[in-house]
Length: 209
Image 1 (cartoon, rainbow, N blue to C red):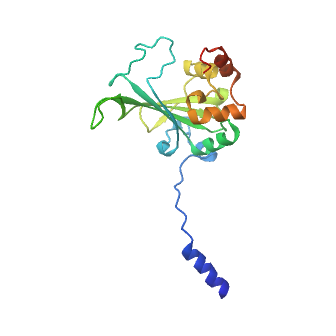
Image 2: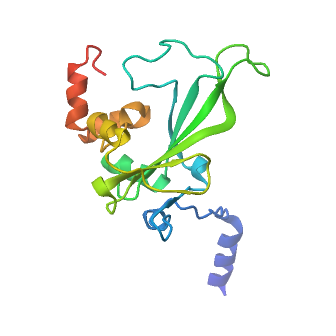
Image 3: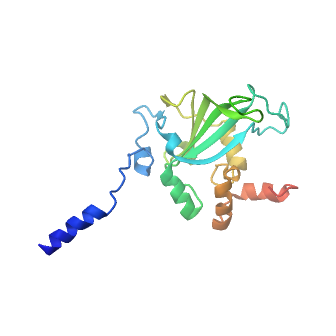
């Protein structure tokens, strides 16, 4: 009788656990994101994943069209998200596990609006989305999937392609641009997982970056 009373008391005073919705952010669930014909389904709740970084007017070309200038209507923000289970694994190892999904969301830049009189804010309209998926079943272990909107399905971008060549030649960790993710770059250095190609570029750069 006393034991039952104590259990009832604990149930009463302990905070109730918050219900956690099940998103496709685990290794097993990501593996189910393919359709029968091999296309990848756009993750519905990617904006509730881990935010890694945002870049404005980034260009990998040595001669951008308007260096040092950002203009509303012409500029873009690149927002990057990763599924939570892969992020937690990276914190432990400094590397991405199989079934990692990175989402690059592209939005336009807006100028003065509301009380903002200078600088840029992000538009509500999405201009494009690109997924970078680590999957041992894909050629090269990684695949790109391009979407026009945050819904639907997409076929893997065929190899060879400029996106694969650029990532494999310049990425800091496992064909991903961790050098642009400020919260993860130092961790990768500590874990010793930076790629030889990236370290060679850093050593050759006058700025050391």
